[in-house]
Image (cartoon, rainbow, N blue to C red; front, side, top):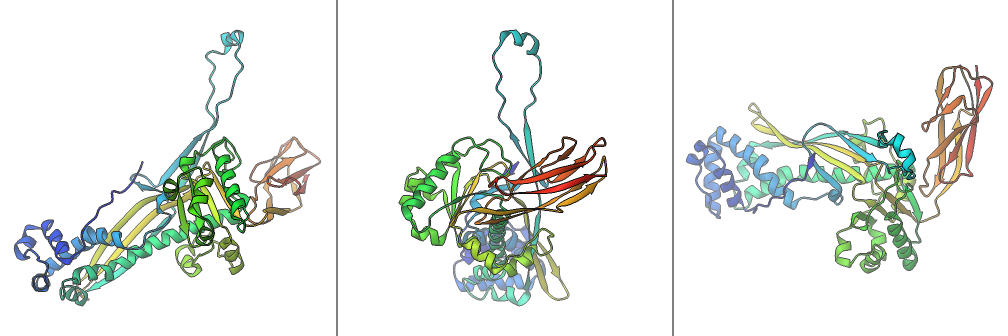
Length: 449
């Protein structure tokens, strides 16, 4: 089970940091290093003692970085704006299984039938999704002896030293997590895997009405707003809106709160600002995800279109973000008189196929065409083949299709896999029909060999 980390606070004066380290240090350290007082002379005195003994240097740095530094830096460095959707630390294993139980079936009451069916089993219809650890990065920095010496030259030297050395690693980690979460939204949107609704961003009143209707609709059982197509709903208390800064500037908090049936104070806890869904640092993403075969690099035109998305309404459980590891490790290079520090971060970054989400777009979403490739294929009896389908859309319309066959001995799966029965003969017509716009279809002729 994931756990939420406890928030700790610590004053960041150099004297308090030094004393916190001393209080948790070895007896040898405590005997040699005096208690710090908030003045430069005391800081320099402690620095002189520590710099004279390599063993004290190692103990000091280890405690500073691993025990004290992280607490101070976390409280002052950049924080991921979307961190509220994270599920916490995954203590065991590297995979999360998400289970969804579909609605139970109704039966007609009949005492006569009950005599024969009382002990018959009805197995619950259960679906599951697996979220695996898919993000393992580390950040590296070097602390040299002269850096350590400079930390003891002034009363604020130790805290400045922390900021200089490790704050940039934590800031990079948080910023990269935010960037990857925005990229995840972009991929889901451009692949047509989020329900969409048009919103008039130029008309505040109409925009408020549209958002209010979306909020209302999500409270009712529906298969229309989740990727798995299961019957589910999202209470208003679990609805959150991720909104870009431009759209937020045109809407008052009062209007938005009214749309979601919340008072302004409550609503502020359910709104998250992002600088834009297309504000993706491509160079940075190439560093983070360039080795992933599923990574897609967006063009400038695609980023512009993503930036025009005003908002995304999500169930609080739509994001499936788990921390598996966040840990500092260090190694001393005794020849070079420096220490290398590594900040490792491992995560699961995914979305739930069962949770609801609605993307608001500034124009009418449409499906312009459905194309099956190839449009004709020969398959031997008892064998199978996979067809591809391309769905062209505007304004991020969903790209899902329904597959069908006009031959009962030739079946096709939701993934476009055509299976030919060993007794089949002749031909079959496979059809792909857009779920969003059923008027858009394409066919493939299957010849059975």
